Length: 190
Image (cartoon, rainbow, N blue to C red):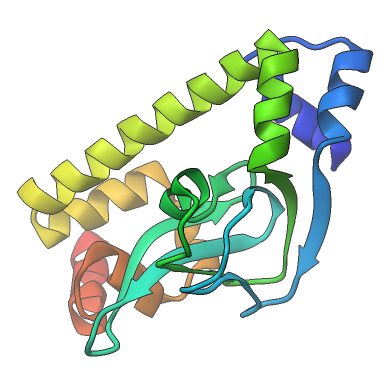
């Protein structure tokens, strides 16, 4: 998995063995079980998580207990409660495992240290953050301007592997539709 992580970074920057070893030394691997929580509302959030394997979800529950999924994270994706991490406030979302997962944990302190000591990794994180902002903007615009059917098609087009890993009720929560509507959309797409 170490080489997989290096490949992830080297999609954006090139590294010497020494630079990669220095970067990797700041990460802590963690294995998680299906349904295990990494973050719950009220928790102090100190880490960003890179997914080596498995699938996770970040979500919030409304006052009626309805789940609103903000993000899924599969292999090669990053996830955390970014508001809590960067503002130093307690978590407002849940982050848990849809399946057994393995992540690399990077504390905000170590991220800042890496960025101040190695310009290349600062560039890497800037590119990753920019990509995340673009994806978030696209998601918000899709929720505001697209029909349920269009959102379903977009998700299927962008991330077909999600449909293999994620139960239908979670896909429905991500799209903002009922389970029944999702079944109808799935039937219409065939």
